[in-house]
Length: 346
Ligand code: SF4
Image (tube, rainbow, N blue to C red; front, side, top):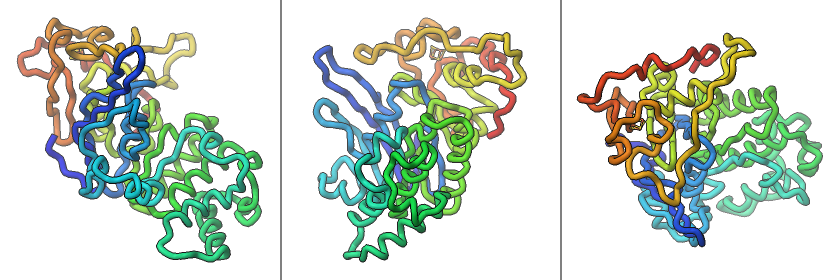
């Protein structure tokens, strides 16, 4: 890929973890990028390497046991080359993260208002009065739809509902007006109604603030509502990347097709079993020599077990790493294997 990105460009990222049982190759040479005002979704099953990739951007992968290599260019500066002191200035200010479970991230013993203003105080260029900090926090609460912000400012996390806690995390992520927000499964812990409200809120705020957003999810339904571009990750590698509309209309990797087919459809009878991809992801202690998806792929050929597929360009911004896209590959019924996906409108 030769694309250029103005906010973040991750090049050839590899992350290994040394354990007593051997080395886990969690992220295996992936590249991706994001521009201002864009939402990029990193999609895949648990353990595929999407969260580890995001943690590498923030340099919060513990080293050791982790070992990170590659380039992480943020506005042209390689984050892997910065000192911890320089990274402290970037984390929470230039790059923010919204975590999956607010209760893990929020300090249960500290008032929410104090926690939100701490983030601002840490990165403020000069001393700011308590009154000014409170005003900034209340403005941020207003922006994310926290009702009665004056009273909420003094409350503790246990006094907030799940949805309100997630709104507080979004306020914390936004208060320093970052250029990049990484949201790691931001709605997984919420019930369906609140999930939809949160996605709507994040979409509106992202559009208004023109912040670049990396959305990490396993849910292609969430992606349809939010993302401009999608990178599908499997076994530590990006297997397909495309504009969101192309992923739904013209998926070209069997794994992407499997994920799409796994989305429950409103038009299917409740008696019909839900589709699931057979088998399990490979052991990343000892990843397959060829295509990581081969043991689960109904289209696998001899070459798939022995040589990793190169990246094939399908269209502008649409790439897929699958031997079926080689111009001499036998014809196959890949396209027709996509089941109906009503209810998904990217
Ligand atoms: Fe299936 Fe081969 Fe394509 Fe891998 S490279 S997804 S095994 S057809």
